[in-house]
Structure formats: structure tokens, C-alpha cells
Length: 83
Image (tube, rainbow, N blue to C red; front, side):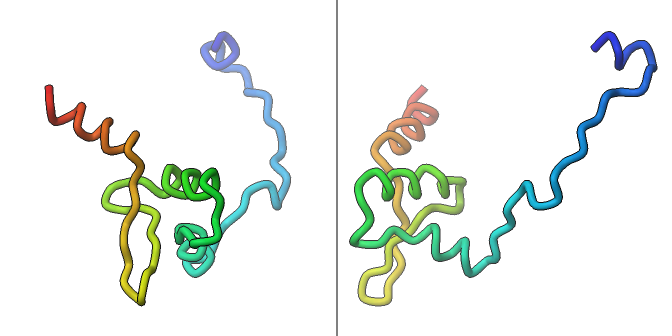
């Protein structure tokens, strides 16, 4: 903070060109789908990772999409509305 306040140039570190990862929409859609052969840990990780209302991880059964949330997420939602 002292450097920034003093007006001196800030130290910079050059970022590697391929440091980040960008996912195409198709890849993202594949990652957010919980598969029946996913382990419980993988399924929970996908559900947590893709929970951002109105978005959620999903499972497809007989061509129908079902959106998934965990009981932990439900409890946090309920706590917000049951003040």
C-alpha cells in the first residue's frame, strides 16, 4: 500500500500466456452434467461448482434435465428466508 500511495511504479510480474484456462460452452455443459458413474465426491464437487442461481449442475434422465443442489445448499437458502 505504501508503494501505491507514494506514486512510485508498482512491481509487475509478467503472466504466462497460457496460465488460465478457457472452456467452450460445450465443454462447460459437459462438466456441469453429473453422470451416473460419477463418484459421490465428483458429483458433490460439480454441484457446488456450478451452483450460481439460476444455474446449477444437472443430470439427464430419459432426455429430461433435472437440476441438482445439495442439502447443504438448501439449508443455506432456507436460512436466508427464515430469518
